[in-house]
Image (cartoon, rainbow, N blue to C red):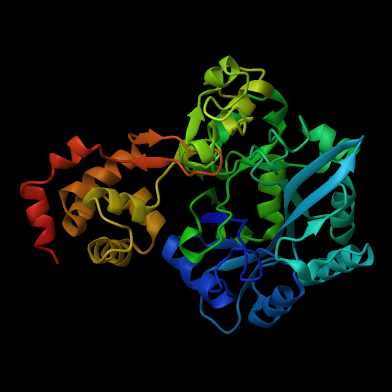
Amino acid sequence: MRVISDLHIHSKYSRACSKDLNPANLDKWAKIKGVNLLGTGDFTHPLWFKELQQSLEPAEEGFYKLKGANSAIRFVLTAEISCIYSQDGKLRRVHLVLVLPSFEAVAKFNQTLESKKAKLASDGRPILGMNSREILKYLLDASPDALMIPAHAWTPYFGVFGSKSGFDSMEECFGDMTKYIYAVETGLSSDAAMNWRISKNDRLTIISSSDAHSLPRIGREANVMEIPENEFNYAEFGRIIKEKDKERFKFTIEYFPEEGKYYLDGHTNCKVSMEPQETRKNHGECPVCGKKLTVGVLSRVQDLADREEGFVPQNSIPQRHLVPLEEVLADCFDLGSKTKTVQNVYWKLIERAGNEFAVILDLPILEVAKIGGEIVAEAVKRVREERVHKTPGYDGVYGIIKVFSDEERKEFAGVSMSKQKSLF
């Protein structure tokens, strides 16, 4: 069976997250998106943990499902924590995704953190003044099958490799416990190929997750595996990650990293963005105000890379760059993603294919054309072929990915657009 997983999301108890993020809605939107293994997010928060216990029931070993529902969606217990602490006289800050196989293990882990005076009720993603190695030890004490995955590894402020995190390597962060780190998360501003440029990453399984703060963001990055139905459980899922099993881990689904909000160096206030070579020429300073630029992911990868761009390790798991379907349709019609025209086509495609990933990955182009018209069919084809136009993001500003230039869109504005409008 095809398993599409998204391990890193948040609940309604996390800061700046939608209040609609509850178990029933997560189940509903996972179906819409085509994610059939979804992280719960935020298991360290006492109210969310209680809600999960009340709303979920055991399914396959280590996985859960919505209580009393005839649903194929499975949940795995996950959380993200923010660690801010001093190490060797330097400020360190890193975000970590945690994965555990049972409510009992989560309860034990949370109790350990609370015994160390952690304020878990403060936020769904709590800030802990403990070092990463220490927390990894507590996690493995709660369950030897636990996974700790450095989150959005290249993000400037809280990625383990980020320009402002304080670390230059996994070993510097986790010390002698580094051997228990089996995977790393790309984040929206990097992809697998950027991570392949670091030879020390070869032993790691590169995963992708949405870090969703609202329901429609679920699955914007994900992982695609093939697991026999009779072997679908937490132990096998964890083994695939730990052993980097290329036979079963088929590919990651990535944003185009240029769409991430920290891809290039830049300064938001002055609307300045720069490629790495420009930043070096300007000594890292904004040419408008003279302040230091925020060093983005591309620069940081170049700083730490020991391989040329384009290098592909032998044991690498492939990647595919996709664009969320609503964004594709909005680009087709040059309209907002929530407009009636876009939403009508979106839901017709979902109804026909079953879910969003089935539309983007699988639905025959002729079928797409029957439902959405020639322009939508061409757009889906281009996304599958990764032929898009990119305006990179920087310093907290999301980049823009367009399937069509204005001129290209006009090519479809005649007969095909007339046909399209007649559908509604």
